[in-house]
Length: 234
Ligand code: C5P
Image 1 (cartoon, helix red, strand yellow):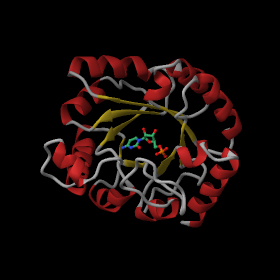
Image 2 (tube, protein in one colour):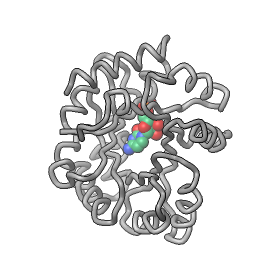
Image 3 (tube, helix red, strand yellow):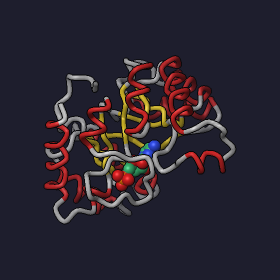
Image 4 (spheres, helix red, strand yellow):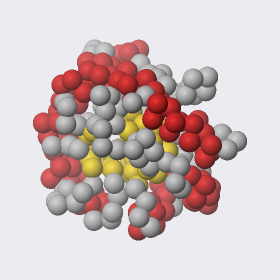
């Protein structure tokens, strides 16, 4: 079961995957009060997104910087040291043990929650085999989640399909799941998916939803519908 202390709205993270900061600001304004967290990722980071992330955080909004860091230890530690003082709520690191140890070393006394990205939700067993892994997505997610827990990370990112197994082995981690699709919506490039209710029932703490909200005719209404589904799953 997901951790009980958050409201249904707090659990909804919207991915502001849009080409520029003007579009992101418009979306953030229309979704203010309808979602819990704003996630800014690589698309926007290439076009002013980090400044916008800082502005939203300075404005008191919970901000998730989804930069999926992976580099040599010194670089990861220094990057996290720089991010740690800026008021962000979440930052992602690829869940390689050395990178996670380096990230934890840079956190200091900041409240920033470091999340280990286990296996991207757009990858299935065939994609992993093509990349040279013999483990299945389930096996790799679980072993990376256990590494995240033992290195002192705040949580992990995985698909809704692995949440129950991760929750059973790593009860203290925050579990964040993209790959969330309300019934009937387009899957896009996501391969390991579930509905919001199913992800929550499996034990997700936070759901990341992008296109089903950002490409809806009325994003605030789409977000409200997902929040209702989250609430009804408890
Ligand atoms: O539009 P959609 O709901 O598929 O967006 C999912 C978001 O979650 C994207 O911003 C993507 O970068 C992010 N993400 C993911 N899978 C992961 C980690 C992050 O889809 N494992």
